[in-house]
Structures are given as structure tokens and as C-alpha cells.
Image (cartoon, rainbow, N blue to C red; front, side):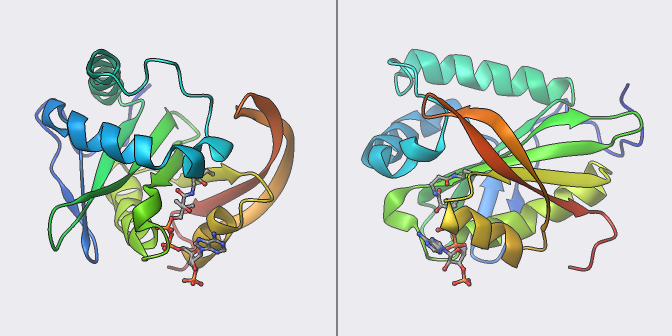
Length: 194
Ligand SMILES: CC(C)(COP(=O)(O)OP(=O)(O)OC[C@H]1O[C@@H](n2cnc3c(N)ncnc32)[C@H](O)[C@@H]1OP(=O)(O)O)[C@@H](O)C(=O)NCCC(=O)NCCS
């Protein structure tokens, strides 16, 4: 059930501007830069992500990924963004608001990654701060969730500094890097202080 929605995104979704970053939906022409950044960041990212399929970085897999994103967006299930540095339009990472539940939940889950060369420059903090109003105001969600492995110091710090509250601990919550791993559960509510 999709109610409380204020915008229809059957047209291309507008970009979101943050402090020094722009978020926009991925498109076919992003493939080369996306694949190069993911490859260069492989050892930095894989401990914290689901296992990458063998063909993950190929053009064909990217095309399928875009098709899935478009379908999810049409169905109000997920909204995927790439993050570009405003200065030079370099791709620095990605951010997805997924698993959207309407009805009495009005909630969604956020996932994110930054390319290794761009880590610790504040880009994900800026991107997260730009995504939050999109979730609450544009999509009219009530609750934004995120989960991370307890040992992921960067992710824990990111969530805590962008207004998420630790709510719980879920055992063997997600299969990350091939292993069912415990996660800390975080959420930010629409009326939480910024
Ligand atoms: C988590 C991640 C997205 C953070 O992106 P980022 O652009 O480096 O984050 P920011 O630069 O905005 O930093 C956010 C905070 O985390 C801190 N931080 C970043 N990397 C850190 C690290 N390795 N160890 C400790 N703190 C770290 C920053 O110092 C900052 O806190 P501060 O403002 O108090 O100094 C990035 O580290 C990443 O992609 N990691 C691998 C994949 C991953 O963990 N995905 C999420 C799975 S839940």
C-alpha cells in the first residue's frame, strides 16, 4: 500500500544537493567510473558488503542493476543514488534508501559505501544529511533505519553523528562477506532533533 506519498517519480528523479556533494540516480553512462571506483575499493569494501557476484562490475550486470533500480523506484520500494563531489563531479560513492514499507510502518533502510580514495573526507556525512530530508519530507517516511557490524567504527560514527539512535542488536542479521553477522540497529525518526 503506498499512501502518504507527495511525489510521483515516473519521470527521472531530481538530483539532491548536499554540502559539497550531489546525489542522483545512477545511469548507463556511469558504468566505467563506477566499475573503476568499485574495483579500486574492493579490499576496502568487501569486508562490509554482501559477496560481490563474479560478474558484478561488468557492463551487463550494471545494466541489470539499473533495471532493478528503476523497477524498485517505480514501485516505491527503493531509491538508489550515486554521490558526486560538487567541485569536479567525481563519483565518490553510493547511497540507497531501500526496503521501503508503507502502510502503518512508513519506514525504509539505508545502505551506503564510499570509494576508498574518498574515505574520511566527510562525503558520506554530507550525503546522509542530504538524504534524510528526502526520506522524511519528499517520501513522507516516518522512520529511517540502518544497521552495521559492531566492529565497523566508520559506520557507527557516521550514524551517530548524523542523528541516528542505537536501538538494538540483532543476531546473525545479514549475510555480509559470506557470513551471517550480528548487527547494531540504528534508526532516526521524523521528529528526532537534527
Ligand atoms: C562507512 C563509510 C560509508 C563512511 O564514509 P566516509 O565518507 O568515510 O565518512 P565521513 O568522512 O563522513 O566520516 C564519518 C565519521 O566517521 C569517522 N570515520 C570514518 N572512517 C573511520 C574509520 N575507519 N575509523 C573510525 N572512524 C572513522 C569520521 O572521522 C567521521 O567522524 P568525525 O566527523 O567525528 O571525525 C565508509 O567508511 C565505507 O564505505 N566503509 C566501507 C563500507 C561500509 O562500511 N559500508 C557500510 C556498511 S554498514
